[in-house]
Amino acid sequence: MGTRPVERSAVAPEEPAVGASLGFPCRVAMHSLVSWTGSRVPKRWEAAGPPDWTYVGIRMTVSEFAPGSLVDAPIRVDGGIGHVLSAHDVGRRRPDSNEWLIRGLSVAVEPGERVAVVGPTGAGKTVFLRALALLDPIHEGRIHWNGRPVSGDLTPIFRSRVVYLHQRAQFDDLSVEEILRQPFTFRIHRGRSYDRARVIGLFESVGRGEAFLGQSGRNLSGGESQLVALARAMILEPEILLLDEPTASLDAAATRQVETLIERWCSTGPGTRGFVLVSHDADQTRRLATRRLALSPAGLRPEP
Image 1 (spheres, rainbow, N blue to C red):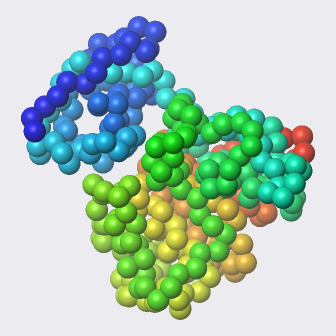
Image 2 (cartoon, rainbow, N blue to C red):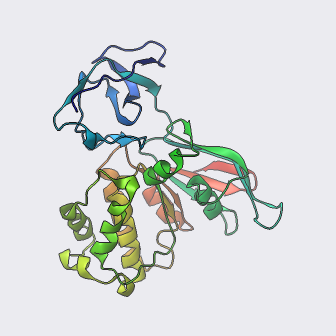
């Protein structure tokens, strides 16, 4: 296909020159569809794409470019990325009444940040987490992803980059490997490929060998199911994991394995991989999170 110039846009206060150090993370977008995140404007782009490019559109994929083709300046700089995920005065009512389940909740998550939401049973932690994922309708407020309000055609892309994990994963008779391969058949993940070696490495880090991939999903223990669900999300390279009580009802050993997998995923992508965790386990939130928020009728407040 050859090369195409990138649209120039003077969104930043003063558009930097190619190769200039900005001193803050910025987004450089190619055709407003594929973006790179970093603190320095590169001199040229390999259209085949380094692995940390982020898909923000669906009309074209990197694979449409000739391998090794280059895209030079001009470039588009959208200024500071700021919050990768944010909620603004979010509220949700009960489906059968006007009673508010949550209301007026706001949070902003930076790239790579690890946030825990704590609170008593019934405070609305899971309701809020599902609202962040746009799995349930919200009746007030808005959700932003990388500074953009999420709606319409952007929603499925958002859900591929901000991934919600249920409290208890359940699988059918597919093998573990078939379960892990399944998302790569979906249109939203076209252009991505299943990396078996990486998967084996993930499971070896929690004491599961290659043979584990052949086990039936139906026969997995609760802890093993959570490990598979986490691994399936992680290999899709999301920016944020929304973790809803990921170790609920698990014993101490299984809890440690789940936490190990979360820690490994975050540490191998510092500054780019983060999560919002809901947990009743105060010790777990202190082990895993860099910031804790308490949810109460008064809203979300910092928790020491």
